[in-house]
Image (cartoon, rainbow, N blue to C red; front, side, top):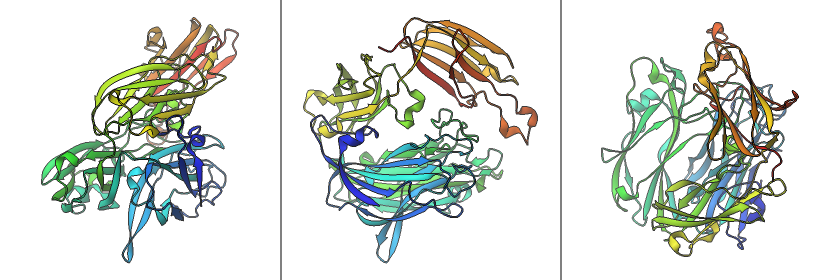
Length: 558
């Protein structure tokens, strides 16, 4: 492990998160907890165990980002594959001293992808980021940390970015100990029962965070991995927040994988972070009060499903008042970017899409965007809306000038003048990202579709449209085991090809039926772009899940 200080602008090229306004260069402390050079842990389900020296507690951090890289390698110890064959869950745990013992805090959960035949970014690996700013009261001094497993090699860093947070975090509390429980135990209330919480009288705000994942194959609906259940928080015996734990996996950015990766699951997908559910408690309580708090789940049917399990943490965060009245943040760039998380939406030539957040106490009603290719003429856009404190919104920006993209593949966004006044925290007003260069195609080319069978081609639709969404080609109602060749003649400019599958299982064979129903395995289809002379221009993966999207440019990029 090593700790170093670097200039934040240096990091921005490879990691996209709230950065700094032009002219500011705050230091960022980097804590390198695990590296690719560390030996893969030995034993089934083994994790990395490290003692880490985090920064001192008196520092103020605008953001703390945990950056996780995984890559396939022959030195992994899980099995014979470069990336472990199966999807396994692991958490990043902090062991916090508490008297003569320690208390375990989970700060992030992750499920590994199916590793068979997996491409995980090659030698570069694949990146995930976690915003762990709320754990600032814990992340200081010398701590024992447990993380990862031996399915892939792991590189884990913590980036401590100097600056003013949205509100100071006073404390973090486990409402219940982190654990794994059967559905029956949870529904029968034999675990995670009602308890009293004493709210910090000095705090000005409170937030609940749940991290829940379902596992097991119990009962007719294979609970609890494959079954959506309703979860509830109760305050003084009244239902306060109710939500379903369920995640859409059909557009998982890591594909193809060697397993049933496209199918939706309870709070996770193979190769993703476990979903977190956050609920602002501030307007419901009074600082200093003692509240009755309880967690509940919908009751089970007596069909065996009670034996399925859930892994979960439930935490309470206490805060000071908002540190600014007028503060807008740019949280992320969805497109254009080369960030792994958004690879399904990139390369992109369409309207830039970004996420903004109101980080100030006053409602955010207007904002000015300046954006475009780095070192090029910028576009300006005036946004209007109504975001309350901590509320976010995806914003589609008008098309900028993409001229010079190949020579200058970087995109920048800056925001200013929230509510028409100076931003009180300029360090979260700027983001920069590298972008992917779109494929260049000739004006005339052929789209060849070879369908699969067993009636599955009826699930598919194909279209080509311009960047305004205007469709110039569409086809569906495909027949089994048939080859279609669609000749295209498009004008110079930006276009998008899309191919969808209603059941989100792509056009590959259904290999998971090979033992239980071999007659349902079927054949695989394919989609290939060819030149008019028959040369292959682009080949798509058949095991794509829900949708294929490709934005391309006819002619030479300007």
